[in-house]
Image 1 (cartoon, rainbow, N blue to C red):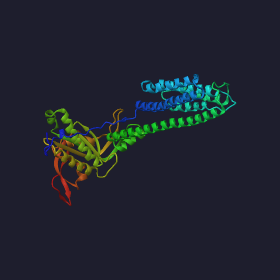
Image 2 (cartoon, rainbow, N blue to C red):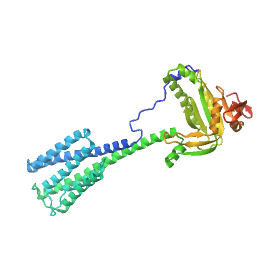
Image 3 (tube, helix red, strand yellow):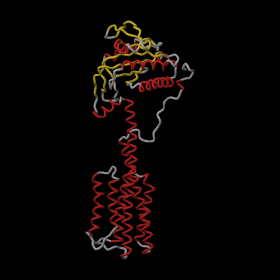
Image 4 (cartoon, rainbow, N blue to C red):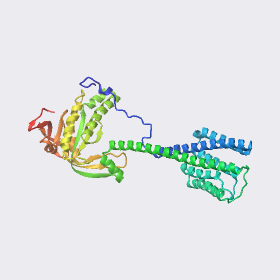
Length: 430
């Protein structure tokens, strides 16, 4: 089917939902996944530090004392750390976490015992690395029980106290002079400081990236929620967290139904039919949004709009009549179909009920009569009830159609919209 301009709307570009690289909603699974990614960044940083420092220590020890057990141990630690760096992406996070902790914990003790020993007689430095382990344990505590985290914090802290206060005594394996010990202390203090900064910076950077992702996901979720519910209603639902229904004393309700859609459905492929309906209703959505009115829902090929709720507005009837004129103009662009519109004004009950798939809906006689205005209407005409007529008669010229039977209400007078009044006269028929 083509429009009167000759184009086929069913073959036009339908609105598409673009894929997003980020999570659409920040679910529990996405949150844990993000936590693990941040922790892995920190563990990779720690492994790089261990690999580089152990390699430097091995080189320095070869230069100072030649080949020794200390050199072999440092080379082995460098190899293990490098291998773990290459394999960590294939390993479960918890295994990488435990491996990095114990490699660092044992390696620091070996450095302390080999280079400085344990004694209260002199100021040592290698055990300052235990502070880094404590910080790293808290930054990487993902899927870790409290007892495990307590052990990972207690062991390095207790080791720090033992070495700092010389609670036990151990003679250093390497016989280093005072100048060499001084140089080693300076390098260790600087390395501890730089490593701590690297770990915390990596964590802050990843945390900032995660926060940005959460904000973006939340914004997308907010936009989705606002497309489903009016903003005041979505805000109230978030604030109160429960279903509700309010009485609205004065509003208007519109129903629009595509005439000829059933016949069209039997002659058009389902995919093209849906694309056509989507195109028409999308244009209805734009008109409704521009007018500041509330789309309530679609029911098959019927479209429901309300004015004067959730926020009241005195011109609710006139606003809906104007929208109906614009909607009819849209449908007139398409051949072989028309639209039948019905409008009624009065009080309704509006709110959210049920426990799943919330929708902001309306109930009451006003809604039922508005639906009858449409179903008992005329193709390509806008039929309004007497209450709506009384609200817009000073703005629009309307033609009485007589009375029609309304289920449960008896015979009711109805009117067909003719045109908008201009300075007391009637404009050309709309």
